[in-house]
Image (tube, rainbow, N blue to C red; front, side, top):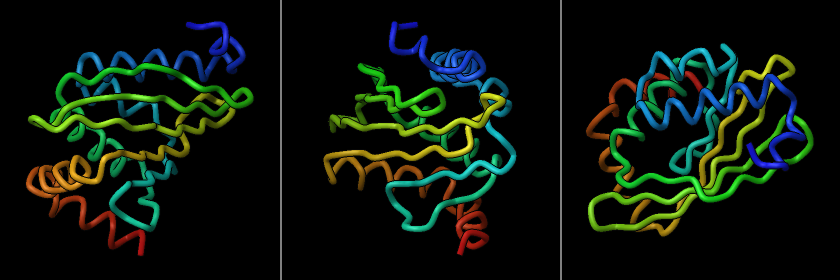
Length: 146
């Protein structure tokens, strides 16, 4: 971990290690225990937050299958329980940049995960692929959030 990361609570550091393991392995069994049951996912597509661990696991499990050449570049730390993770990836020929804003509870579980992506053309491509992969299942969680 970087010097900045050592300012994070030890439980948060452990969850971040698990997060990076998930990104490397794409194994949802690694992902599931990182999230609090009451976590909230904030999507770049939906204006309302999507509640619950199952929705977050569904969404992030699909995203890691769609992104190609995914890499984190920088981590920004705020206090002991909040991080921003800058990333890049491809969707086919489209290159994208993004930021994951992640909040953790005192036990180190993820309680909020917000994603921002640019450019818009890459976001549209991600939306199309996400809809094809998990659209009907995700719709149930969006309806619950409304």
